[in-house]
Length: 250
Figure 1 (tube, rainbow, N blue to C red):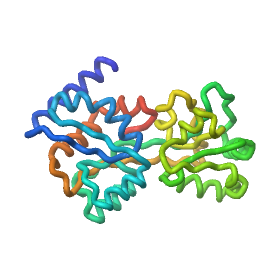
Figure 2: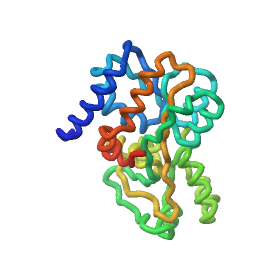
Figure 3: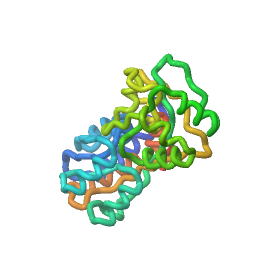
Figure 4: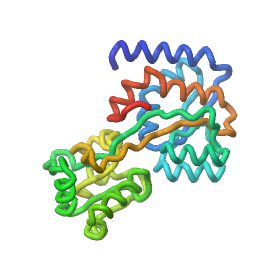
């Protein structure tokens, strides 16, 4: 990590530490992208604040259901509309809502495999129809968008029998293992798996950016510490970390 980034993170952590009163274990609910960012910034936060961060992940929709089932946690970073739903239902605190990052939907192949043409909507369509197998999440914000796109393009039926929709965030792993020829998921999930290779984002005309939004649990025993985490991952020190994962801040 560059010196300027380390200095920025250090300054942010000092500010967080000054606001901390008592060390605590903070449970953070989110998807893989949450763990990727917290993984880079969490250790410094723990050292500066004395708090311990435990990131619990699954598909964002699954984590939302766990919150609705009243599983204890302190902070959630979910897809923006999921966070908003949980605020409306009183599970999350409205005044802590903060947009953290956003990621575009992209295509992955097994590392070393030829990269197909996805440069235009027509090329992307031909690539999908020619592929032997495709995988994308069973449920997720990207899934909702992709299902609509494939229906609009008139290829939903043609893709149905060769599409695998895992219930867990294993799209990139399936591609890396050769279990699917093409994977379609947000960029950071692809970058996090060494055996998968990023082909590129889907065409701009059919692209959708998935936003991830944080908020504190209305039942957190450590609300100030959870607010400190949000302050850290939405502050200037988080920008280079988020960009390094293939996302944009905010």
